[in-house]
Amino acid sequence: MNPEDFIDDGMSPVDIEKQQLIDKNTELSGALTSTGFQDQDNPALTAILETDKILERIEHFLKGDQVKFNESGAYFTEPTKNVLVIVKKDIKSGLTYYIQEIKEAKKGTELSKDVLVKIKNKDSEDIDIMENDSRRIMDKLKSLKLQNMGYQYVSILDENKKPLNEYGVSELMRIMSMYVTKETFLSFYDEERINEILADLGNALNNFLYCNYEKMGMDTKFKESKYTLIALNLLHTVESCYRRAIGGAEQKYMKRKEIITQNQGMGGYGGVPMNMSPRKKVNPFKPKTW
Image 1 (tube, rainbow, N blue to C red):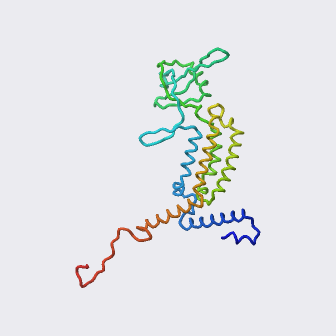
Image 2 (spheres, rainbow, N blue to C red):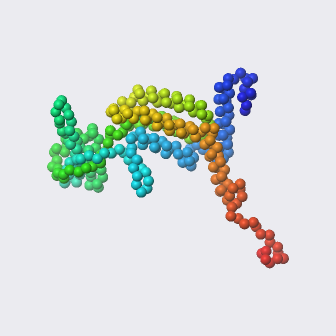
Image 3 (cartoon, rainbow, N blue to C red):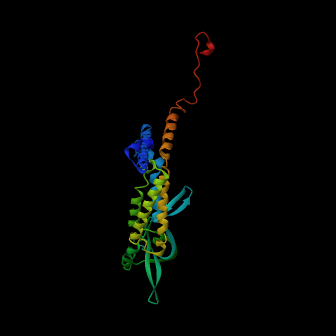
């Protein structure tokens, strides 16, 4: 459809461009439908577009998880730190308690308090103790006879490395789940429209973070320092998703991929079977052709 077709209808250039994008989306969607991509909830389609993997990486980033490596490759773990603790064991129950001694400056004096950071059960399973639960459990330990096992360094959960609390992570993930979708990848956008979307999202995201950063868990200087980094990472991830849809590039790629897959399923390209020699002509009067 050409822009001249709209002149007689009194449409503005913006309306013309919008209608062209709508027509192009309709055309590409029809092409995908004809090649078997009409099911947006197809697990195979989700795997190709990797929307779940992208959202998973975003969630790990917002939680402050750290990346580690082993023989199998990279994996995510919660942020940790090593601390020196006093190890005490309850012989009767078999539970081992790891208690950290923390010194606090208060009104010119230095006070020390014991904080329970970890418990290990009979199966050697580690149980990290939240700060709010530590005091309550420590009060109960006073009535037990615990055997002192000496000092030891242990790895414990480091809450200070988590930029957001559970509320903050869930709210930002809810926003991102509306942008990192199969529909985004399989749409048709030009660069100007993508820039408009990113500008709108950037302004709204900044306003949301500014009004709620303390409620979302940014209650220390270190966590506040990640404010800009979080906003930029989310915007850059959304930008990458939309740029895969410039000119319907993702749809065109998947259409070509499906056609090649179908042809290979028939034994070769263009419907011609592979690895098949031409059939011999049999002449009943010539034994060599039998």
